[in-house]
Length: 192
Ligand code: NI
Image (cartoon, rainbow, N blue to C red; front, top):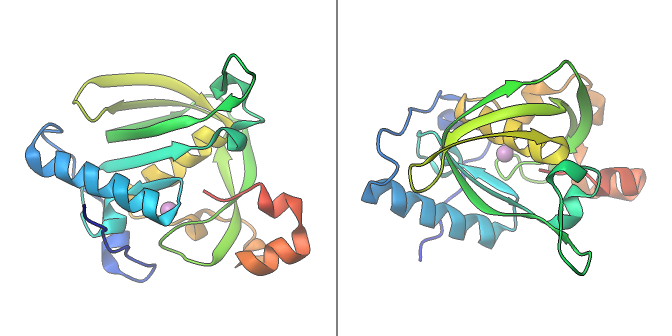
């Protein structure tokens, strides 16, 4: 069990374009995936990209609790009891994102590499994701809403981009503690 140290904004590795992974099934990558998942679970975050743990490779792990997907019915499977089911912990190797349509939305995001802050970021509503999974299998799917937001945030990390660089209204950049105090539910609903 290994907890990896998280790089914070200002560390140059977060500005690098990460390299593609030639062999997802290599021991090195399998170990990295395992350590990233344990680190993400320990931090209580939604997503983690390898550059955030000082490894400049195109690897992302993420998982989304069901309650965060309430407005994106396309990505929200209902369990028999009607309890929303989230996206289980997943791995993306060499992911690529293509916007489908022009629609975008503003939503609050936070980042383990920008601790304590949150801000409103525009993201495409509807994207096509192409990637390999942790077993090296190729996958392609369309993704909407908050799930699509998470993927855009994480893939930006692979290109050396942090969410503040995507913001169009920097007045919404705030300490999460204060934003929750003054903005109430709107801020509570956000955060990647
Ligand atoms: Ni992040």
